[in-house]
Amino acid sequence: MFQNLMVFQTAAEMAKHAGARQAVVTRNIANADTPGFQAQHIPSFKDSYRAGDQISISVTRAGHMTTSHRSNGVARSQLTQAEASPNGNTVSLEDEILSAVEVSREHSRALAIYRHAMTVIRATISR
Image (cartoon, rainbow, N blue to C red; front, side, top):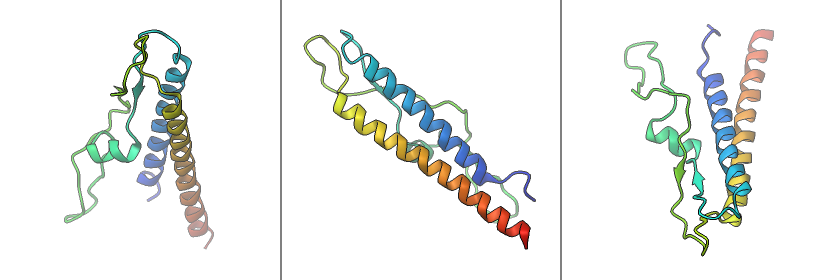
């Protein structure tokens, strides 16, 4: 019964995705003064999930909702469409700071989902 709870897999995927996004934001900030550096970004987990890059839902009975999306476990970074500075760099520190805050919120959300699921399981088992 509790061997394959999708909520834990989803929370783990969300946390991994936030980690990958944070790595890209950090790389962009570290190269803010590098001539010719092209800033990258990874779409939010919500946008990636809607695009079908994440997990699949298993069918446990007829009529149960399904999707054909499969996780490859890799968040794909894309070049930003920002305007380049005179030295060819496309990093905007303001945008990167806002992205870092958004990533922090995504990671906190993943941890909150995990904690809440654990609370529900503990409450169920203790009864």
